[in-house]
Amino acid sequence: MGPVNVRNFKWLGLSLVLAAALAVTGSRARGDDRNKCGCYKDGAGVCYCEKKAKCGCPGECEPKGCEEQRSRELQKEIDAETKKAASSQKKPSADDSGGDDDRPATPPPARPATRKMSAAQAKQLAKLIDLFLADHPDARGKSIEDVRGDLAP
Image (tube, rainbow, N blue to C red; front, side, top):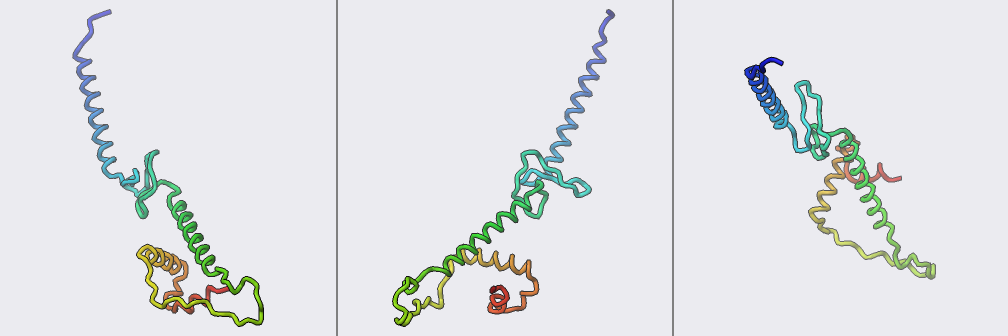
């Protein structure tokens, strides 16, 4: 074996350090463009996400399936609210317990007309109204009574 030329190894080491520095700089530039979900868009507008990416960036670049997951959760909320409203309307009164039919039925106590909603209830109502109007844009000009009449079976 002949003598080893150390100069060639210096150039090899220097080029490896340079390549590593370029790789780190490139990944930082790409990492700065990521949103809080861990996704980014390239120049063509194609969305790329990390394996650890999570949902939570509506309207931005997100992992696949996030929109479907949000719509399923929203549908569950709507179903729960609908079920809650239906069960509150079907509360049995004391008169329905099967007593004498010749007794006159007493009307249920009247609710106060100015019942206040909590902030959370108002927010839920606004969300449900927005969802309904998104699905039924023709209902924007109707009164609430007309919409109730259209929805009643």
